[in-house]
Length: 360
Image (cartoon, rainbow, N blue to C red; front, side, top):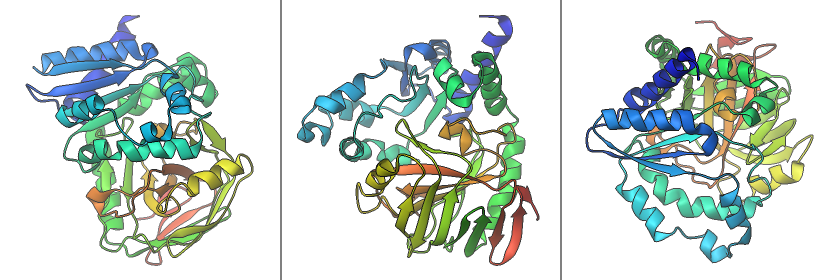
């Protein structure tokens, strides 16, 4: 590893440990990664040690969880091992470095079985979902991620560092201005290719993501009023990626906040199954605004794609209680809509964004 690469990995690890979660002395920090993430995994553990905290490394071998989920009886899928529950209850913080060998791992497990696993684990994450305990998820460049993005590994590595090692103070100031405008909005309207959708943000406050739970950060997001979404949205520009599936040309029709019609150009059966896994799966759980200027292209990688500057993303399923969301589901599926070519956003009838550029 060259000096420049080592320096960037050290800066990345410090960003995660010192800013995103701000590890404190004496904390117990669970750190997850797979073998390909070892360089960042190691540096994160070093940083935690320098902060006077306990690093508790957990190495995840690719595919093993899927093998278990395929074979275990449903009663086991619906419960959590006591030792795992204890670890999550006792930890002060979570850091997850994703470094997949194969981004399709898990695609052979049915949505119904994965829903049982997620429902069982939801209580483990309540403290993190409510912002009571800090956590951060991030990625380390691997050939699989580069292949999905249509890049060489070297190019994807540059892309990744260009999205995470940015001036987060300046980005936070810019996103603060955007959040202030949407916080005042009642009705939001999104218009684009195959899309004319409205929903309400009345009484809801946005969350600015600037070097916190997701890295890269770079979004302002809301949980819309649960029964307010009306109209249609077509994700014609990019596939909707979830659990190793790529579902193209997703079209969703909302009435009273729920999906009442759905179709797709490919893998439509998976889309229908995901929307039916529980009562809350077909509800609009999130509206997010991409604000990361370092991300300009789609990579089939939701952690990055939902932050593309000039896009929005809508998630069906679970909402965020810490910003007023009340919908509960085992599903949270982000789908990205590109507005840069021919799209607009309105707040209470006022044009606020046109073709991906702000008008206020």
